[in-house]
Image (cartoon, rainbow, N blue to C red; front, side):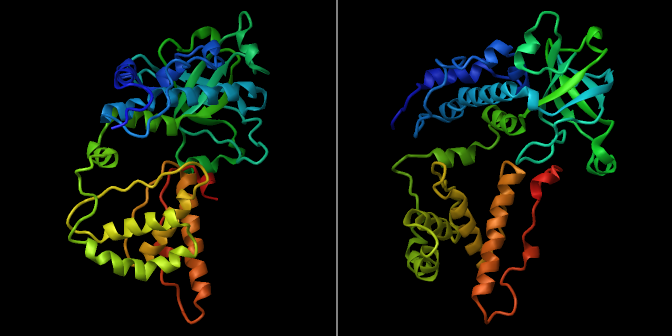
Length: 363
């Protein structure tokens, strides 16, 4: 098995260095100098190999790249901080019960958010996982935060109003949410006079990845994906004889939309779905622009035609919306192309979307 760049020993160090560390604690431990240091992880970030010696090496390969990606996102946000959404605080109350060990929770009430509207983006709305800056003045640049006497700290939004309450607050004026100050970043009395909050980034997707790297809940699936043992039989021999009929029924239609590698990926998944003798995990992968979403959409479209109930999971509302939109488009195009059909083979109501309360992502 090819080892790739970055030895297993180096990866083990990455795993243990941040063991039992919450992702937000790691981010909040960075100083401004570290955030702006493009070489902060220069000797730690390694090229992620194509094969792995162990599950531990696989998980550890993503630790430093994830941290570096987050640092770069923060750096970009600081560079344009003068354009970031901000609001003045009208109420700040410390909660008696800590959120986690070494942290402190605050109930916050802010005035109307300014700079909510950015070109080509949805209006800003406070969400759990938002990284905010709490400062005694609205900074016009990152260097403003480094001036002598200036006080500021990082905060993490942990709770926002429920959807019904949020919709009632016309104009988003004077609404409450909850924030967490991490270790060593608690808000002191000197900062509770004239305060502003500035939005930087949302770390929920990165936090979920971080948790999966360390919690390792379902290793059976991971082992299936990573398995490169040539002795392991990939195809069920009891079902191989049926593959010819699958190609005859579905391959011509797929070939008119997908390239050869995409057709092969879909056909492989379809054939294995019919197997009742073993559970199989397949990985459809490729670089940006290679048509992964298109391939998955065609796979779902074919499964719908087969009357197969399918559950699709995605990391964000936007991602699942994109897959669902493409699937719905394929269903409508199929109906329009078949002039002799009275109804769609799959009613649009059979496609159900579930996501978090960030409804702006669904529009």
